[in-house]
Length: 284
Length: 307
Image (cartoon, rainbow over all chains, first blue to last red; front, top):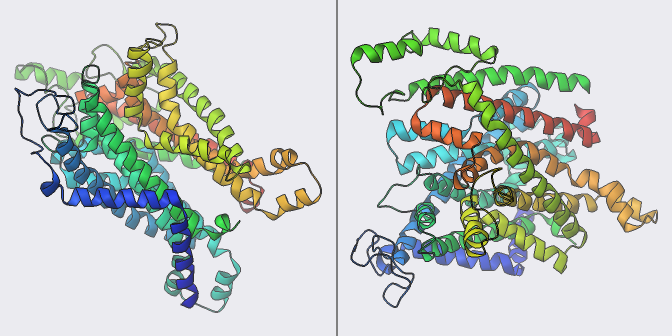
């Protein structure tokens, strides 16, 4: 137990030493706070239209400007953060639960179980998910919870592959073979030997999945299949920005910038986490 | 070795058939027929339309007929474009999409691979930080943002390159290829850096250095083979991603490729076109995954002996 906690405190120390990761972490904290308190922070309503106003460049009242319907862009970005971040976290959680259990079972039992389970993953990889999501959206309406489930159901595949690979490596290590020889049960083996040792890669990959999930949501919203108005995610804002980029470039630039910075922060934080949790790479 | 490859191929074929079946039933489950959007037609006309497209037969018979034709390479007629077969449309769009994907992956491999290997070798120097920061931007910048920004800057602002089309104006292939390839260049840079770092920490590299081999030989002759395994295993799934990317890029740049046909078919409820392209894409993805699996087997002696 002592050894474990010192591994994590070592990792924490290494993480704090990584400036990019710390900066990423701080940006994320600020964004999450802004997203949670958006109703109190937003200077204007995100859905109030003022057609007389039209698209205004950034000014003192609307400091990121307004869109073509006269809605305050800053408020819309704030509310968009709620949707985009929520999709990121919830869909990643879905992907995590499915992918990790699938990968552990496949990797640990190996042989026929492994090849069948991984073949299923291949089949699902082969299904272009956009049809799957379009169908769900058509049948059940364009529902945000459905979107979480659909994206999660797509993203777990990679997680399963990564976890399986890790388990395959770990299960051939001497200490696992020794535990096996001593007759440790499967469940104990997962809990005591396998799971703690893949926790690092899982944490790292989960952090790196969040930006991918957010990208996927934005991609769907960009094609018009994701979040529906008057609600706005960053993807829908970018979609509208592209439509009017020649005359009102700020409508593309600010949402795009926010989105890119957020993905940046998440990726730097995830990278820092990986370096911190993988002493083999970060020892020199 | 040959046996392993044959076994993989033998698995791939039923997988494609299962995917075809699942897609067939998924698409038929969707509410709304292909002729809903058109103006109201008399019941008799509707009946005839359904008869022509074999929609009046029981589902199981439709399925049997479809699969039977599929095995012969016939994807059936398009619902949307009367008189054109899906097979014909696939082979009109495919060369364009393949060409686009080829340029994109070429850009990605050359730029990404080079940047990653150099970054790993020159770890913690400017040659590591700068390319890796750019790679990070490449990953964080979605295709649908990068494309319009490139169009805005090089097309509209500088008026250097055409903003849309394919094979009609000089240089109109440059922006789409870069847009599609950028994210992959970034991924490949990171993967090859990671793979190289891990390989450079191995004992056999230390042995090679201890023998007094010059550093460039250590890298070219010993480290590259192991270090690039993650890149090769990424290439298979990357093809799947490239196809998704082609939806966006072909839409933004108005390129008449398979990706745009596909998005259009999905919005038009063109059943046979959706079905046909989905099955075709699936077969393509499974095939490229197979290729990258085999390549990894050939590159990694340990995996080779285990298999």
